[in-house]
Length: 464
Image (cartoon, rainbow, N blue to C red; front, side):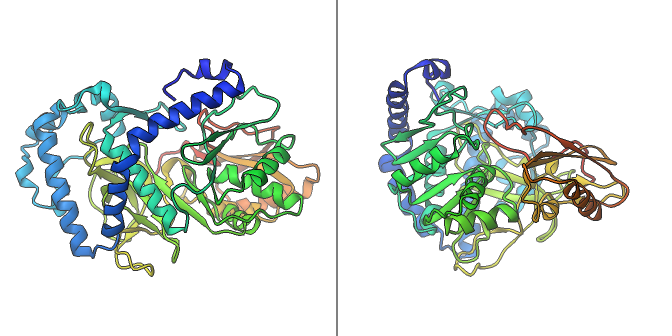
């Protein structure tokens, strides 16, 4: 929040609610209103564009962005002159490969030179990554980018049958009440957007019945949050033999594992709509209601798949996701290479949309286990040994070396030695005999400062 967190945390609960709603009101004026309505109406039309129309749309947006960046952003002007490139050399999005890509290190080193001289930096919105994998990255968005981000988000909610203004319970990383708080309420109501913001930092056995009571009182149409957070609620519902019907569940920011999705849908009697976005605003993928495939919102960015040398990878091949924002003129990111690994494919979805789609769930390179013989094991595969183990409250997998894997376990009261033996054997089947598996029992597994949970942490570089 723009309000000092320290002042917020030290204020009485009723004052915190007033401060939150004042902040919400400022956000409403800044990112909603008529601009949001107009953008949403445009997106309701463009979502049905054919592939040729998408190509033309993105090419026109790209050429406009490149001209702006070349004329007003010192970093890109110097970079392109160094490589003997002029915006006129880029006729359409098929020419993007001619441009050098940029990395997180470039943004850290040259970020100040990436801001357009057409904008007052103080009037741009400051953003940053969560910092779950290292030093947070800092950057800026212009207002149009903020409005577009909200409009794309709400377009997916409409795909799920949820309308703007419907009651939604939010379980994300905001510290809506102090982490040190030991008595409910652990939530705050955003009256302007009809959202109940619930703390993700108080989801313990001691407090979960308070959360459920508040949800029953609030009667949300949908719930949105991190997969791991909503999964905790789903496990609690199962343990007490209850379900909590809603229209849709929205998850993001962490890898959604099949074991989580299955239980969440079972206990909330609703489909899960996962979505993928980047704080850098260079990619936004949302799932439709028909196929639940990840659709890359082409109005938002142009996306590519490349190898470590920046060479394009053909459709279906696995590589690093690269994004070029089509809206952020304040601090443009052009051919920005992420550390997210995926592949994608084209063609019309069953829903009738022709957007480029992810071929499977995108995952970060530090979420993939690497074996000594060069195999890449997705974190989703590693969930399978845990499926029959209801005695495990929480777990985390850490690969510190190419031949060592540490599994941290928070055991439940019914956990037995046989569970350890089963888990070690089942995991060994999946990672191979070349990796030594250690199991450590812990009381809890901490979240990051932003409330995110990383289930797999690999510190071994990928051979891609």
